[in-house]
Image (tube, rainbow, N blue to C red; front, side):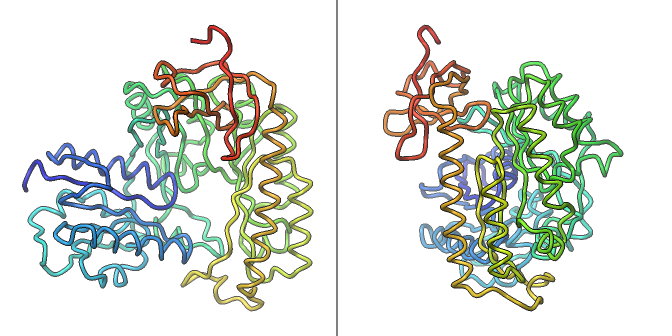
Amino acid sequence: MLNKNKVAFTTLGCKLNFSETSGIAKQFEDAGFQRIDVSEIADVYVINTCTVTELANKKSKQAIKKLIKKNPNAKIIVVGCYSQLKPEEVSSINGVDLVLGSENKFDIIDKISGLQKGDPVKVFINESNTEKSFTPTYSFGDRTRSFLKVQDGCDYYCSYCTIPYARGRSRNNSINETIAKAKEVVAKGVKEIILTGVNIGDFGKASNESFFGLLKELVKVNGLERLRISSIEPNLLSDEIIEFVAQNKIIVPHFHIPLQCGTDNLLRSMRRRYTTSLYKKRVEKIKTLMPDACIAADLIVGVPGETEDEFNATVKYITDLDISYLHIFTYSERENTLAAKMENQVSISDRKRRSKIMHNIADKKQEIFQNSHLGTIREVLFEAQQAKGEILGFTDNYIRVQVPFNKELINNRIQVKLVRIEPNGNVLGELITDAL
């Protein structure tokens, strides 16, 4: 293998993918490669793909072709979920040299050894349901927050979703192994860890432990100032977890709880494992104990069987729900899923119309949440990145704040008064006197 070669990365999809890209990048760096920005000319390009929707497939394919055009002589390596589910489609793209599935991507250094541009494309894909290994990774760069992968795979097999086929069964390291990795992250100067995975509430299945047990140990890690929970299923977000977050100063008051639909009939057809009543109880419990908490929800519009009445019921349910953010997804048929075979498919035009309605509701929810905090003082952890002379950071309850750039703010938690909402959606902050 030639050392000093330049490698660049493109990542699509979820935060878990970004965490895993960082792990793969470290392997290249340890092997003597120089990591550069994807905007530069590299000898090797690695594209970590997503397949959650048909649009994700399209974006992954576009990213691959863009880099092939950028440097036709570069080795093009495609990894991740799109590779896992569509290896023939990926390998048929002229210019691709190596295709690795969800598990094989962590053997990338071995697989690239001896790879020559122009050789027949090599494909390494394992059956996803045979995946048993767990590779811990975490994101690290100029950010002061790190996404720590604590779990992979999913056992739920919801009717619309291909992720279990792309990532395999639920699995994780032990609590002790996960804590060791968290300490490694904190030792790099990271102040905030965001726990990520496919279904993190399922943590512990593979080690006879629990996600709650993991939280209780993570908050003891010396030097960790913030711990943030990413997406967690409502049926796995127990009262004891909510109460523990409310009582603990390390775990921030921010919850991302997938909803997907707002009627029990559709939740059943989607094979979700909760009811609208349970979801509402979770939201009410959080808001009772933590009135300032940020609650984000995922929502899919246009699923099979979503009549106009069902959609209107979801609109009312969402409108009445005390949540802060909505992530809207338009339903996309995925091969080999039950939903794709269901009758009563919703027309594309209705999906788009309903999506627009929900996006308007989402904007209002976000505005209401941000407005409720204007004039208050909250602690902001500022990141290294800047834009147009501003430095950005997040409050504990996930309000994105901007103030005039000052390098002394980087990676520090500073008291900031929230002044007004800017056109870009950020909240303008005002540093409290003598905050530095």
